Structure formats: C-alpha cells, structure tokens
Image 1 (cartoon, one colour):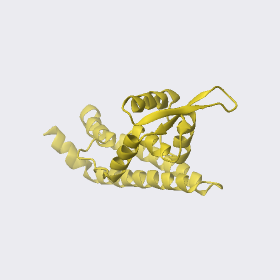
Image 2 (cartoon, one colour; image 1 turned 135 degrees about the horizontal axis):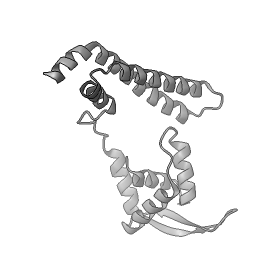
Image 3 (cartoon, helix red, strand yellow; image 1 turned 90 degrees about the horizontal axis):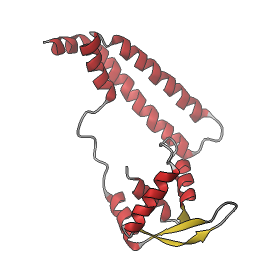
Image 4 (cartoon, rainbow, N blue to C red; image 1 turned 180 degrees about the vertical axis):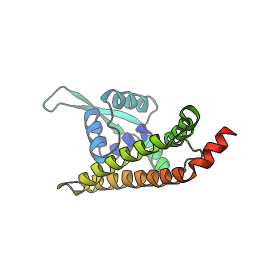
Length: 176
C-alpha cells in the first residue's frame, strides 16, 4: 500500500499539515502500523516535488507553525487512478509460517513444536482482538480492522491444521 496515495486521499477533504495527516491516518486506519512523523514529511516532500501537493500556507495552533499542504489536480487524478485499480491477489506464497514449517523440518526434523507454539500465539491474538471488539466505544473502523485481522488469523489456524495433517508427507518429501 502506498503511503503517498493514503496521504493524497486524506488531502482530498481539505488542506492539512503533516501532524494532522499522521493523526488521521492512525485514527482512520486502526490496526495499520502507525506512521512515523518523518515518513509523513518525507512523503509530502516527494509528493510536492512530483506536483501532486502544493503548500497552501501555514497554520499555528497551540504549538509551532506548521506547513499546510493541499492536493493538486495532478494529485487528485493520481489518487482516483489508484482507487480505480484492484488490489491484485498475491501471486506468490511468501508466508513466513510456511517457510518456518519447512525449515523446522529441515533444521530440526519436526515442525510440530513450532506449529503448536504458533497456534497458541494466534489464539492469544484472536482473544485480544475479540476483547477489543467487545469493548465499549470501539469505532466501526476499529471493528472492521479487528474483523479483517481475525479472518486472516482464522485462515492461518485452518492452514496450520492442514499442515499438521500433512506433516508426515511433507517430511518424506523434504527428505527424499
């Protein structure tokens, strides 16, 4: 996912300064890795260089003076092009879970211990997310982010069960 496109999308509402964009990213995309301030400002500089945002002035609230950015026509066109694209399903299996199962078999001769520990970690994370969903005051965005994570964790758990069922076959295949 492109941070530049996310910032452009947030700027379609109105001009904003970097601190505001960081805060809105972190609030509106719960569950996403929070942006670092340096990442926001470096991205804004690239967007400005590429003609997708322009400085529209400065704002001073309770702290230091902040540069306010606005999206340009080119930036608006770019974010709309990006939103029209579909997110391609991953063409390759690059799961760290799968790699660890194979390498546990190669290096340790068994993946059972790894799969059980990983299952336990997934279940703990699912309990945390479920508790967060049932907490008072959770926003719809937070609920959707938790649902997304829960579905992915559930798919991993189902895959781990399949892996445990096929582990003997995989072990023979690797050792052949």
